[in-house]
Image 1 (cartoon, one colour):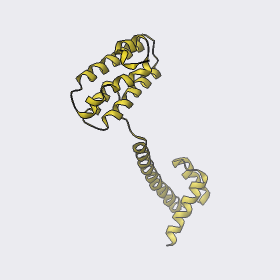
Image 2 (cartoon, one colour):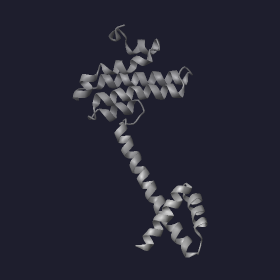
Image 3 (tube, helix red, strand yellow):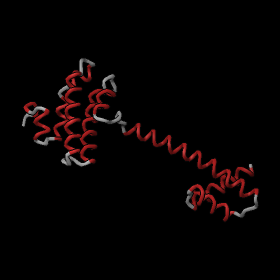
Image 4 (cartoon, rainbow, N blue to C red):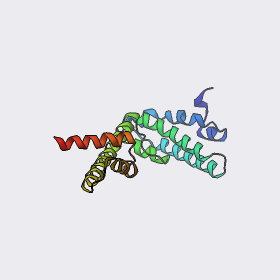
Length: 168
């Protein structure tokens, strides 16, 4: 089957949705080089409108719409490789610029680090207040588990670490 023989209308009418990213890829040279992308914009708008119309008519589920839009955005992100056309084309399909796996891991790591930093600060406050009020270790450990969500092992390690800090 030769993909070039299919128009955007054929793809929608015959429900050949997996071909949409390949159809968009025909604009790769224009999109990646920064030449005029108006034809790609028109075709993307047509595809988007038809997908939304099919969704409204109950022919496509929410998940199918999200997946189709995501597939198109994936190919756009790949083709543009971060050039000036990326944001405009991705926005047509109602998405955001796709995050690479490494960017996702970095973002999640930073968020986890901030959360751990806040948890450590809260743990320190709980331990110090517990000691000030004369609470025993069991009561402090319970507070660390209840208020911060630490496991018993993490709470014990945290308490021991703070105890060692006092000795130094």
